[in-house]
Length: 495
Image (cartoon, rainbow, N blue to C red):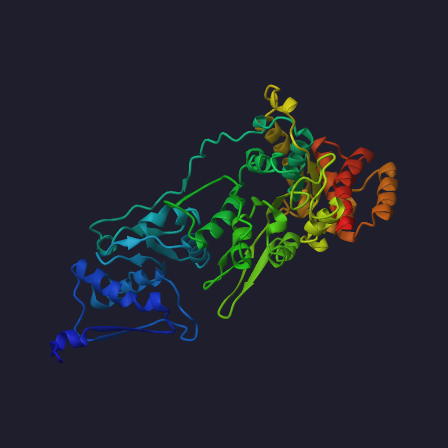
């Protein structure tokens, strides 16, 4: 049966051109319903919305609000020139409400760089306000509020930046009994931003140690806060428009895919390593990850960024994170137990087979490798240690302040930790004394250190000297740095 339609309804159509995806194509129905719910009538004619440039694919629901406001300006619901000098993004509900979208903070920073204002959802206004105190922001809950704002009947005030109150955490280094050498290694890693690998039997406390690492890290600086929040905004992980000054701690499961870890998918979104930028990426059961996924970390560990290339996208995300990994010595986990006899094969072979899943180039990029021995019952019945996270965090903050001042004086304010220091600068800032130089030369020959391993030893020694507030790297600092490397060389030879 064919039913005749009134001429007005037949002509009242909205077409969107310019390579829209499904979400953008469906915007015509959301826009139509939102305008009708807001009491605005569209003219009975065909409407074409052109998204330029025409050869660039358009994705996402954030085109709803600019399309609706463009139509409102065309029919006179708002002044025709009201949108001049504004960047607009937001998703519409069928009732005319404006829903939050991802990516508002980088959009606001981009608009501010172009000396434009921003129109966005009210739920994202506080997030956008971080871009600049001077940018004009109109954050509305509905289309009616925007129309009234431009008419002057309901002027919307500028939103203010918000920060999430730090959540109370009960994780403290004081909870861990024994493992003093492991806690010391954790302090070194936090002070210099070094990567850390912990090897030990199941139940030794590796995950407990890693979970308490954020408690000794300093809060994010203002510039770091913006970097981290921009990534979280693109990923849609900012809630209520409020940012957080706590450093990220990401702990993906060992079944994570390469796209989940490095970024990708349909829209080339940031992955776990970018979401851990300026924070911690904890990989538990390291050998259980897909070897190809682990090897994809090699470039980010070296240069602090990751490139995500897809058919329609090529995006580079920052990925300057601390890698903290934990693993058992072998598949059964008991290789380090005295007198243990493996059922599969000799212990050495079982250990080598398990550790061969981690490539040598990846292992070469990890600065600190430590054994975490099993905790005995005698350790567990002892009273809690007197030193907790607060005392360690104070030493870490002091060491990081020394590093910030050093690199600022060297004309490299973008370098924040010793782990980021370029090799060319190490000859100046990490020059050991005569005894240390001899020890380093002998150790480099005996351990067959690579050039990367040689420089990483110097970076760790520089951090140890900073914790001791020493101007010069001494023999003891180098000896301790080499001891963390010695385990790595043993593991590589065993594999």
